[in-house]
Length: 126
Image (cartoon, rainbow, N blue to C red; front, side, top):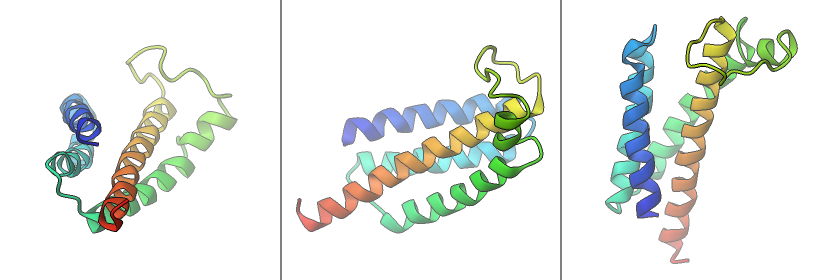
């Protein structure tokens, strides 16, 4: 679990750094840095289940918004037939940026929930 959290901590810091040129870095840098902080603490053996739940709930609410937004995932999947969003790093269409952001939130939720489950098992002595 330590290696898992070290890897994700580094990745989330990189993701936060890549947001520097994003149209809304003030939103995305803290989002990724929160995930990095949770992973850094977990790598040091400090698990905070409430922090994982709080982060996941905030990310889930934002992901639901991103999913149903006018240029969100639903729009990408239905009107644009799941057009390739990874073909180029340039987000030439608004639904590309929104869909990528949705999947970033999904990754954060998954990592936080893995730590939540592990923390529960660790506490139970399993």
